[in-house]
Image (cartoon, rainbow, N blue to C red):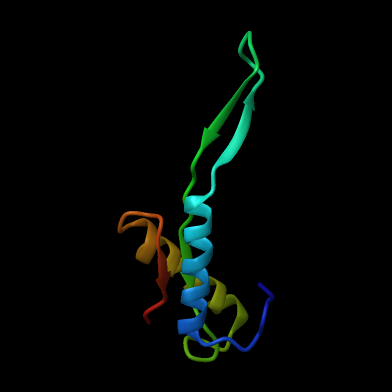
Length: 89
């Protein structure tokens, strides 16, 4: 998936959801080197993603990052995590 600077907010949310689902469904493997016998441990992780867009939400780069961060924490993490949320101003 290439990076584009001309993506509508709805498309960015769909891309975020695709990334979220890919990570959720992937098994990560670690090696337990602290045990007497080295074991491979499989684990799953999740990700929360915040989306904001320019110029719809803001034209200011710093504000854009803040709005995406706000969407991440208020829209995704506070409502259960493992979600994609967009900034609503």
